[in-house]
Image 1 (spheres, rainbow, N blue to C red):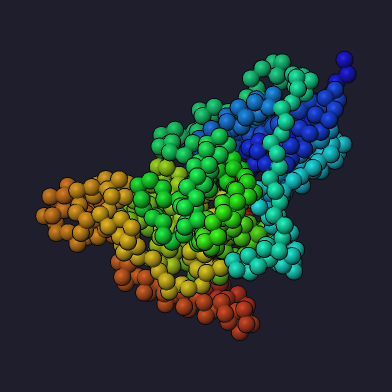
Image 2: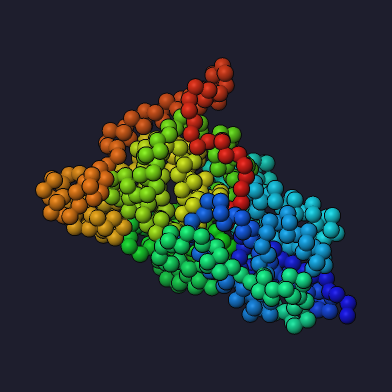
Amino acid sequence: METKNTLVHWFRKGLRVHDNPALTLVFNKALSSPTQFCVRPIFVLDSALLEWLRVGANRWRFLQQTLADLDAQLRELNSQLYVVRGTPATVFPRIFKDWRISLLTYETDIEPYALTRDAEVQRLAKEAGVKVDACWSHTIYNPELVIQRNGGSAPLTYQKFLSVVEKLKVPLPVATPTRLSVEHKPPKDDMEQKDPNCYLFPTLEELVKRPEELGENKFPGGETEGLRRFEASLSDESWVTAFEKPNTSPNSIEPSTTVLSPYLKFGCLSARLFHQRLMTVLKRHPKHSKPPVSLLGQLLWREFYYTAAASEPNFDRMIGNKFCMQIPWESNEAHLAAWTHGRTGYPFIDAIMRQLRQEGWIHHLARHAVACFLTRGDLWISWEEGQKVFEELLLDQDWALNAGNWMWLSASAFFYQYFRVYSPVAFGKKTDATGAYIRKYVPELAKYPAGCIYEPWKASLSAQREYGCVLGEDYPHRIVNHEIVHKENIKRMTAAYKVNREVKQGKNSDNDGGKGKRKKVGSSAQLTKKPRI
């Protein structure tokens, strides 16, 4: 019997079967000639990455659940997910030959690591005589097209971005692939004959090396859950049309927003489907909130950051980043550790960081509060250090969005009103006057009354003993005095902005913005591009 050629779709970020043009392309080609082709949808898992990649246990679990769900979705289409273990550079030469691959498809990406990886895979494919077809579908708009329409550069402001994309045609979601026939099932290769389970999706034990770090499974991974949450979010059209991000609560016990970001990050939910359905709702209700604060506005913020990041390979670091202000941040390991683990002595800040570690998600405005506190507000530590912590702990960690938001909140790029500082006390009180959020995530303070739960240092020692939490013993003293340091930091930002202006205007003779004598922390030491999940 003649061996069939294999059509392969390589899943990366777009871990779904709906609106997946690259996957649909493979299925349609196979269906057009059932006697000529078999199909293998694959995910490449480099086991070595489990040991050193900056990914927390909660996100590994989310990926594991997503891959399990993806396999189930593919089996409904009479296929399955083949998880191939190894690096792309070693995996593809083998399967190109062993599987007689004639076509490889995948969803394109903008991350520097991905660009380097894909160039190498394309080179290997060319050597093996394999056709490669890449499709853009991770965002609504192709960033390269937006840059092209903006004269070859990324829009520097959100409003400019909106003015560019409003003239572009919005790509429509593609249909879910049609079910394959039994003829499309591939024959077992040598590895499968030795071990029939060698390509099964990974178990939780395989991915999560530190299970003690797993928190509550509040947001399960996968396309099924992503679509369920998506439908639930859009079901209340009054809520959708009235949505304004500043009016949502950063410290509600249950999320006051959609929590669709992890599903968009992993591609469990199509941004194009989200946009299409959202626009349908908004057209039915002419009176609705507008970008940037509306639900549509939040979706377009993602597009804005992706477009900016596509034009700057150093988007995730300060030095060498054309968007980023050069600011002389300081290094303070004790303060960084206190912030990272929710031990700053500011209950609102600590509650947010503990929720992040436990659940893998925090409200966007909560991210604003802790990012400002770490950088220009209180601790004067580089945004790159905060970015690393978020990179590890966030379920929705995304290279472009994580860096873009950290630059914004540190007033290093895109936002320059550095004198607008979030209070680590007053900001949380606005939406949770009783401190219920703090009582949940900082249980040491559970017996503190509303009058001092945000400022426990105001309680007398006898009151602290009565409440069962003595500062310095059961809960830390605050590591800085916000009222003093934020004013000092505003002066530092003013000075840094002045230096940056002088450098830009060519007034600095050595043209290094004073960098030569300043200790820049968390900046460009880590130039090696690395993969992310």
